[in-house]
Amino acid sequence: MSEKRLPHAVLKDSIYCATASGNIIKLDISDGKPLQEFTLENTEEVKKLYATSDQKKLYAVYKESTFLIDLKTEEYQQLMFPEGSRRYLTSFVGNRLIVPSKTKLLLIDSEGQTKTIPYHPSVWSDHRIKGTDQFMVYEEHDKQTDKSVLVCLDSDTNKQLWKYPVDDLDLSNVEVSPNNDFIFVLTNRAVMAFTPNSKESGPLIWKTDLEKNYLSEINSIYLSDDSSALYGLETHQGKLYEFDIKTGKKTFLYEKEFPGTPKIVGNFDNKLYIHST
Image (tube, rainbow, N blue to C red; front, side, top):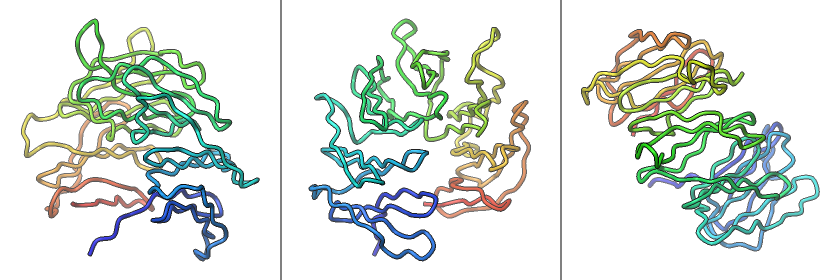
């Protein structure tokens, strides 16, 4: 019998885990012993947990409500969203909770303050928002060209840095280098590298076209922990490739047949971890 995985947030010395009853338990990271439990007067199932980078606040996202918890004082407040907000599509970028609606993005900081920016999702957009405390990227519909575009915003000012036309974008396959100098994007047709800060030549650094053959379809990309390599894994043949992060040159590394659909999920101690469903 399969067990459903409940949301959790890992901090420096503890782990916060959601319970099936809607509470949140703090566990000691060294031995797993319970240290504290938050009861938020909510019996719904927790959908997502996000911790701020200073490890002082925790966002708990439920289906119908969202709470901001102060981990030092143990006080919490319920965040209120306008009608039409899609709480179940929340993202967490740059210490802010981001909630999409049909016409705008709500950005809620660790003090519970809310800002909004215009947002026009494409028909097939999955509403994912990716990025860091310096910038964020998402997909939206460009009314002028009637096409999907990748949009990059400054996280501090919410000013648009650039937008770039894309096809078949899946924002689950976006990798950002730790020093914020590369944004790697995988589509059904290509692997691309962008710079957050657009230059005169545009934001695109390189683009490597992929074979238009479903047997050669790359379904996941993953940036190594030391940011020295970008890996891509084929869905059907289990071929692993490396892309040069500066030029996009594609090099075959390894081939292995996997059951189901394999996807790169992690990189640790010079090993790639692949999950197959």
